[in-house]
Length: 245
Image (cartoon, rainbow, N blue to C red):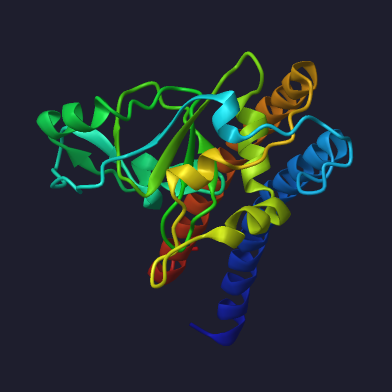
């Protein structure tokens, strides 16, 4: 098309892309807000300036285990199968690239590692070791050994606090200093159980959990809006190439 028409089309696409960029920036700002709130409420998790009691993770969890150490065949359907690739810094993303295993393999894995809603899943093997997310899925699934299952004793501490504690960048570097392995970095369950966790009062953790819930609701709305903007941008591109924009 003529240069003037190209500029007109480019202007429309630039405006649509700018809206997408602002939405992504807003999502990032919410994550930053949550990290700042954690530090304001609980202090630096490494230096523990508020002087909280510091038990080990094994002392305040009802279960710490990991998924299967023998990778089962992946099937086209069956029981959901979650690995480290499904766990992102902003939560579990199973449906973006779903994997499944047979019912028989699932039952064998699930007998030892039975993830439930509210458990914290933690990457303990590979390049993304150290990322944690709360399981919000209400269906059973199997896990690979690259993930640890950490079940907090909710009488003393909450998953929202634990997840923020594990994902805090400064604390993550501190926890991963003693990782083993050469080609592949890994944490053992024994090391995870020995993690020292500053333990604030439960009522303060509950207040933080309420803030997390509110932020997650806002993020869900923003992600939905961003998906709509992505669809709009793709539609505008198609119309531009068809010559009817």
